[in-house]
Length: 332
Image 1 (cartoon, rainbow, N blue to C red):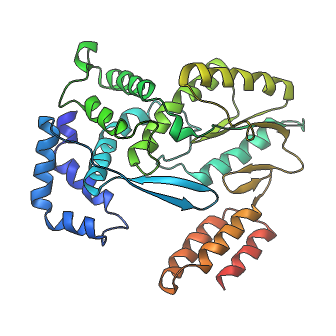
Image 2 (cartoon, rainbow, N blue to C red):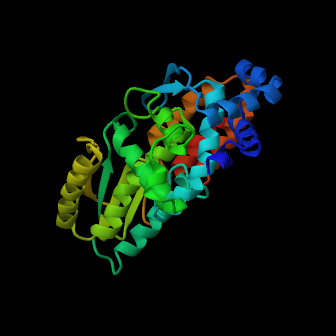
Image 3 (cartoon, rainbow, N blue to C red):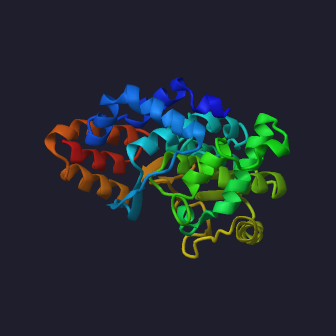
């Protein structure tokens, strides 16, 4: 598997993926101009164990909230893509159906559609439906390196059917490379890394399996660190929340956000989820979402507005309400 990761074919594909939408940035142009030299050097460094992860560039992005982004050097981003190309298919088949973040053929729109389906079927004959909606406090910053490495080791051993003695951390091993990426920061995982998205899903797959297999919850959806459960019994949800709180604390060293973990009836106000307000038979855009897009569009240069319009229309076509029409006026 490590030979597959360090093959020219995989590294070249990783280079192409890493440069998407950014190919004219100076660092990427420099790497591309020297590609026939850079890829063999990178391959040799990976194979002989001399590869060392570079230093991150840190900056703040202010959108719906301020986020600290850590951007790795382009050479390291190529490695991140190469790693994901190899291990993502192995872990993908272990994920539950209703985990929707950073996965092929999933995403926000699929999650919202699934939630509407759950809202319609959970009530059945018209019973009152309640929602347990949770968020994990500082999720990416709180991921424990030791626990994550243990999950990676267990998953790689199981999916590749390798003997336990062959999965010890050694130079030139895939697990060793994953460890170097993980430990390239003092704690947590950097939001800007492609590997962080996959690692974050692997980490919370433990919660997914617990909720589905142990708690036996049918109406459960997770999008990264936001998740919810539907039930016709509010008291049942209070009990399940405490079970989940204990599991996160004891098994994953995570904490539920104290202000973003609540239980409420889904009617008449619907469920605020992934930038939409979701009702049983329709979806509305959140007012704050419309305002955020207005600010984004107002500050864009004229030559970038056509792309923004296309993104906006793709986002709003899934919401059928007067708020969508109001929001579209910013594009006129």
